Image 1 (cartoon, rainbow, N blue to C red):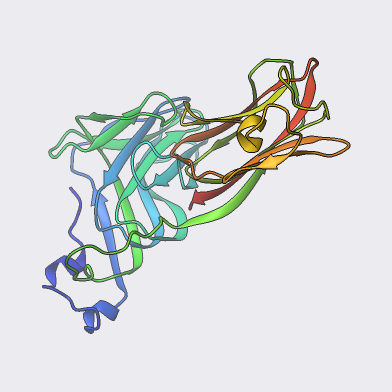
Image 2 (cartoon, helix red, strand yellow; image 1 turned 135 degrees about the horizontal axis):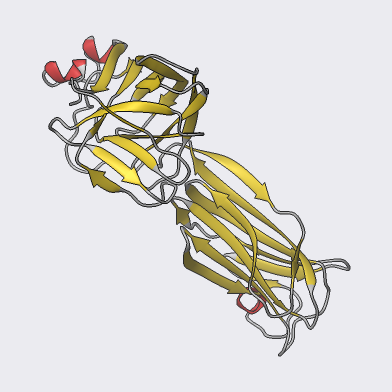
Amino acid sequence: MSKDQPDYSIPALGPISKESRIEWHSQLSNHGTSIIWRNATVNVRHGKFFPRGCRGFIATIDVYIQNTTPFADNVRVNISPEPGIRETYTAVIAVPALQAPAWLSATFNIMWDRDSLFIFLYTDSGNAQWATDVELNFDAYRSGNYGDTWTSENWRLWIRVNFVGETAGDVPVSGTISVVEIPAVAACYESAWVNVPNGVQTPILTIVGAGTLIQAQLRFTTVVAPGIGVQYVMILYADGVYAFWYSNRDATQSMLAASGRSSCAEFYADNIVTVLTVRVGIKFKRTLELRAIQISGAPVNTYGALSVNEIR
């Protein structure tokens, strides 16, 4: 069971109290006494969710590990705000061959600005094992599809989170405060040139992560003008689900116009390429996929780019 944070014992801290300015060091721990050894490889993940009290600078995360084989292994320690969101940060514990049971540390040294923290593990080869137990309260999670979906399990994962720079207590408020975007960083992903057959929906680029789309762009290596039988289309899938469709006709409000813009998009052609750009705030937790359709009468090489705010 998780240990209480030091600030929980201090009643109602004010925003300018002495205690609220102290840098607290603490450890969230989750282990019992009787060990059952487990591991997870390939598509399987094992996790532990701390729903509150996790805002601070994460120095290290410890896992109780053994390796009874003559082969070394890596245990990959991943963190995200909640189950179902792709890993925000990953650190690796190198486990030697014949490692005796011990607490081994993954070094993070990152500022974690969320109140919740989800930690999940897997190994590279299945040689290393981590300790679990079946003591109350059960709080383990398991995924059998690379972390896309999770189920709760009747056991506990032996894990410790070591914080420094932790704030003491919550800021006392009442009523509604403004919504603050989860900390994120801007990033741009670009595809190679992809051959898109005439009239075939074709994958161009996929991002694995979590965040919000800022801009998506397709560049088609053709200057065949739009017409009744000619069209250029962008399609977006968020977390594997169809989320957005946009074509040159939406941008120009015309079946025939060679250029134009709308409130969220622009379409134009120069003497080399035809370009469709869309700016729309689509949120995603696991993946964002960009696809293209072109109906110009022949295959066309197509380039794609996605600009996003990624959760970090």
